[in-house]
Amino acid sequence: MRFCVLNIPNDKKIIRKYSCSYYANGFLYPPIELLRVATIIKERVSINNEILFLDAIAENLNEKRCIKQIIEFAPDYLITLISVDFSNSEKSFIANLKKIFEVKVIAIGYLPDLYPQCFPVFDVILGSDFESRFFKVLDKEKNDDFLNKLKIATEPNVFNADIIKGCDYSFLNSKNYYEFLANGKTAFTYFSFGCPYKCSYCIRTYNLDSVFFRNTKSILDELSFFDSKGYSNVRIMDDNCTLSKSLLNEIKDYCEQNMLHFNFYGLTRIDLIDDEIVEILKKLNFKRIFIGIESFDIHRINEYRKGKYIDLKIVKDKINKLVKSGIEVGVFLLFNPLNEDWTSVKKSLKILKSLPIQHAGISYLVPYPGTSYYEDNYENIRMEFSPDYSIKYKVKNHSLNILTQYYFYIMFYLFNRKRVLKSFGHLLFYPKQIITIIVNLFFRFFKGKRERIDFS
Image (cartoon, rainbow, N blue to C red):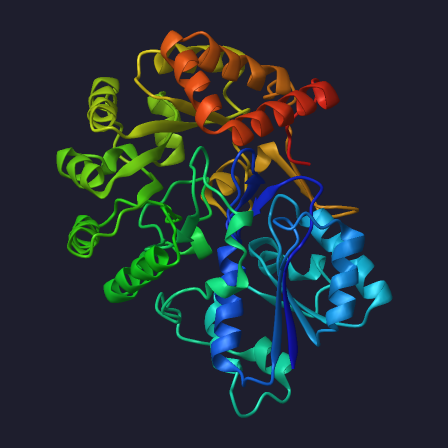
């Protein structure tokens, strides 16, 4: 059997994940879910089987060139990841491929798993248990009737974080992937999968509502591998990279004992930051951490089920401690069109001015089907699958348009002397990334400055 594991092309750089997808501007991460699938296939099948790992996003392949490579390889099975936000173009690509080349397509995706009847172009659709299904069905000795076995394969409803010890990085060209404002080779890994929190709007990694940690030895061995291959940065892809202090302490001790030196990057929540975590992150040489604050309004925090509301003074104190430890801090905010307008953005900017953060981003709150936020606001949301997938708020007078986003970024970055000076420093140290970010922002502005961001 011949397998093609494909990250479908897109006309812009995007990060495609099972849980969500988004535009990549100044950074690019590998499709880890697909890399893990390719690793499982390689470990489970005989040496005579061939695998083509094709990341069309990283390799800048358009649809025509991508299809040409697939046809030249002539796989029996094509395995791909279908996002929520770009599923229309992904379906279109597969439909065009099938018109000129006969191949069985296995789609992994949250949205197709919820609504399989709306994705007839795929031969098999797999949900969040896709890793265990591949592992169970693939066999070194016997792989007959593979597709039907994959359709009916079942496993206990417990995620196995150690189904592989680590990803096979031989599938990747490390030069194609990079972290935001970081020089040198960057490795991308998970220490844990899923999330124990129940935020109403969120699809967690693999849609897991608990957290599953990898075996510590596998993580430490992987870090040694990264060091041997010359990686200087490690981007932790976990939903929350500070869930386990004991794990981070073991990693810190291991790096010190074995003289491993990395710059670490990751995501977390503000309520997971305390004095002990700050000290651990400092000793681990964390360079930047992004925090999902989402809102400074207690009503929004309660609506999003973010947990205990933290006073702004406490937030400022936690961020101050991170910054004083040499760690850059960025925050993510959400814009909710059902109960916010552009004045909400102005209020958020006023609060952000009081925080010693270097980066901030604002995103339109997408009402993902299947989440509790979607169910709670169902009457105000319109979802369609014909002719294409579209999900919109019925409320028309509130929207976050491009001009509002530009207003946010201009006010945040250009009306703060320290951030302006820091940004000039970034331009000197990371010229390619900064220029790419600026060019993409201007292109988007002039192409569609009146665009409504409704994720239709």
